Structure formats: structure tokens, C-alpha cells
Amino acid sequence: MKYISSYVASFAIILLLGSVNMFAAEVPVKERVLTESEKFYGTELRSGKKTVHPPFEWGDCTVCHTDAKGEDGLIMDPPDLCSMCHEAKDNKKFIHGPVAAGACTACHDPHESENAKLLVASSINELCTSCHQAKDEFLHKTKNIHPPVKDQCTNCHDPHTEDHLYQLKADGKKDLCVMCHVDKEVWTSTVTDKHGALDRPRKCLECHDPHGSENPKFLVKDTSKELCLTCHSETLVTDETGTKIQNIGKHLDNNPDWHGPILWGDCAACHNPHGSNNLRMLKKPFPRTFYEKFDEDNYICFECHEKEKIQDEFTTTMTNFRNGDKNMHFVHVNKDKGRSCRACHDFHGTKEYPHHLRKKTKFGKINFPIRFIETENGGSCAPACHARRHYDKVTPKINLK
Image (cartoon, rainbow, N blue to C red):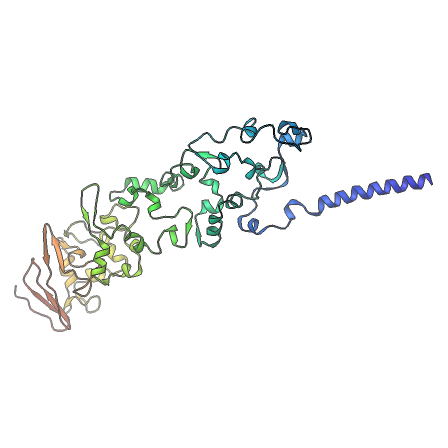
């Protein structure tokens, strides 16, 4: 009987140990069911074993508590308690709310956690959005999220304290951006034709949302045209030369026959919004003067329009601006003293004349009318540079003057 009792006791211990081991292996950390937040934000902070706070691991509750069992109060309130061992986290100009309130345990578990840094969530973004719920909704529903934001909030924000607003690691209007976008810093500082928007109070944030947007490039408006017109619906003056820049919004309202890129809502099809080395921040070259020797590589227009419109001296197909088969574009442009396209055409929009022909053109300080008259097969004009001259693609005209 004695041996039987001993045997039963031993078997019971084995079963008990086995059940403990089975329980420990039953739901490993890495195999447990993920929450919806963990599925969305990830679990990069998770590890295969718990992270244990050293005082808790020592088993000496009196390091933090007033009694050995840790059941009574703390020996002092956070953050003073935490600062006994940890460097102070509230020593800069802008302090994160939980830190300022001494609520270290809002983010960190004081005993143990399955996450790095004893954090109470399995990812940085899950932790941040547990309070910043508007950003949680934003991240869930927004189409284009800025990669550093999607990765983790702490790429840009310090979770404790910083000398910049919103605990950003640098000034968020530009300095923070160029920490990653180094190419834009080099480009904007070296180009000859700079964009004044970069010197406006919000700098990069005038155009981009740093967290994300439904629009490409994280733009704060639906199209680049809509964005540009937030500034270019008034007459602007450049800082360098004092040159007045036309009120494009008013011009487009008054001239509804719009150039293709304007119809598409895409000012950035022609202009580089970060600046360029070309006239008016154009993406490709364009003559800076009224007269200039023709060079096919010096015209952004040929990104869309066929260069043969200018190059072919005679044609019956490439352009309707011809006198018989004589190409009048060639006559005006393809020469040593060639006129630039903007001598006759407005690249944004027109009203009175077809083909985006200007009502007036500027030569030096003179702003003279073109006085274009359209006919069935051609037309005529009488600007200040010559008397009225006619052209007809079917029946060539003879101009005596």
C-alpha cells in the first residue's frame, strides 16, 4: 500500500508538470490570435519571450513599492520614480502629454511585456493611435500614406520630448522633410528659378500633407492646378527681381479656352513646383527672350506637339497655319531670329481667338494687339511688327507688303 501511494503521488506530480508544460506551450507568443490593430499595424515589437523590468525580475518590489509584496502604493509618483533609474524625459521645450502628466505607464508596462521597451502595444503605431484616434481613422481610410508614417510614428516624432512642435525631431515645415529628401534640398537651393511657395510660412506643408493624402505626392488638393491656384489667384511679386506674376486664376476665369494641361488640372505637366533652371520653372527649356535662334531642344512644347510643325518648310499635313503648302510656323520660328511660341500663343487659356492665340503680345515694354481674323481656310493678322498679312491653306495669298 505504501508503494502504491508513492506511485500515485509520483504519477500525480508527473501529470502536474506535464500539464504545466502543455499549458506553457499551448499558446506561444508568436502563434496567438492577432487583434485587428495588430493585423493592420503589425507586430514588430513582439518577441518570442517576455521583456521583464529589472526591479520586477529581481523580485524586490520595495524598489518601487512601499511594501515587499507590491500591493501598497509607490514610494513616489512617476516620473520622479522612473527618473531614479532612467534619464529624465521631460527636459526639452515640447513634452508629450503622457510624459508631462507623469503617466509613464500609459505606454510602458512597469513589470513585464511581450514587447520591446516594455511597451503596452505590439507596434509603435498601434500604441500612438490608441490615444490619437483621429490618426487611426486617417491611416485606415487614406489611400496614400507617407512611408515613414506607415513604418512608425517615431521616425519623425520623439515619443517623450523635443525642442520642436509636436515633438518632431526637426522643424516640421521643411528641415524634417529634407532629412530624407536630400535631393530636394540640393535642388531647391541651387536652381536659378526658385518657387516662392518654399519661402511661405508653412514651406513644404503649403502643398504636402506629411502624413498622407488621397492624392498623389501627398498633395493637399485634388489636382496640381487646384493647389497652384490657392496662391496664383492673386498677382504675386518675385523676391529676386520684383517681377509681377500674373493672376492666373483670374486669367483662366476670363479665358475659358484652356490649354490641354490646364484642362487636365495638371500644372505640373509643364512646371516643376520645386523650381528649375528654366524660364518660369518649366520642366524643360524654353526661350527666355522674344527672339531666339531656333533649337528643337530648347522647347518644352515638343514634349506634346510635333517638332515637324516648326521644322518642315513645306507641308500639307503637319499644320493648318500655312499659305498653300508653305509652313508659316517655319517662317516665323525656324530661323536665327526666330520668334518664340509665346509671341503669339498663350499657354494657359484664351477667349477671342482660336488655337490659343493671344489677344495681345508683349515686345519689350510694348503690349500690342495681334488683331487676328479667322477665315474658312486660314486667316490674317496685323500686329505692330508688320501690316496685315493673309494666309490660306487652299488658295495661297500674295502679300505685297
